[in-house]
Image (cartoon, rainbow over all chains, first blue to last red; front, top):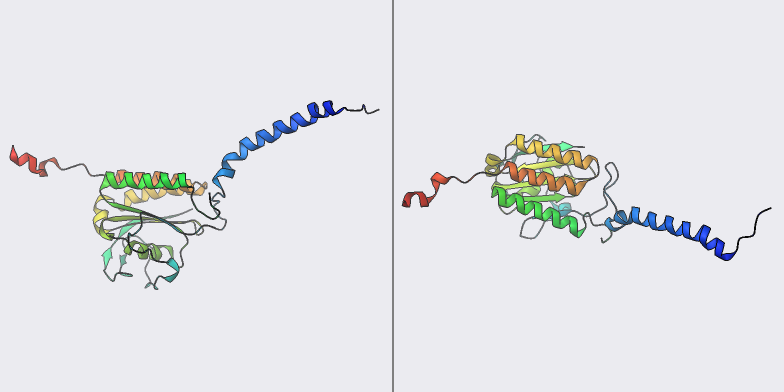
Amino acid sequence: MIPQLSGHSLLVFVGIPLLVVAVLALLVFASSIADGPRYRPGLSWWAPPVWINGPTATKPDPANLPELPELTGAPGTTATAGTGVARTTGGASASW
Amino acid sequence: MPAGDAFTPDQLYDLERAVRYAEETSGLHFSVYVGGADSETRPFALELFNELDDPDSSVLVYVDPAGRRLEIVTGPLAKRQLSDTAAGLAALTMQTSFATGDLTGGLVTGVQQLGTHAHQPPLLHASDEQHKL
């Protein structure tokens, strides 16, 4: 026979545990909720471009940039597009 | 954070601080671009690089999160201070962080590393003060 639970018993044995679980879940997920969507490699990128310390003049819209001549992907290539000034650049490339 | 932004204000602050550190340490101009490329990443990064105010003395870190590509572009003058090998080491550092989904941490560490590698100690013998003594 199932004993009848009073309102007080329900509060103590159901309400309080639920409250504790809710608080713990909030503590666990608070940081990710505050940070918003996180970058996950392999999934689509959702955000608009960000250029930190970019040119002081009007920033170009990447969608309207002129077509570039074919360049090899290796560092040390000569960049001539945009300004028309040829300069030998260096650097590195990586993928993940 | 507003929906759709790549970085929170705190993350942007950390990135800008890392860029300032790299610039103060090396004397070069550092720039970071995070976004997709319409074409191949290297030509696109070079196009962005040429838009900078002083490309010859600049270092551009270009990250394509969707394409999972990273490009570091150094100008002719910057290349004297920051070799391709040093840039490759910083790229490796960033690559490791990006693979775990930590864009901000990878960029901050990588840019700081680039600035440290490009650091040049002052030439004391070239100072005018020495000649006055």
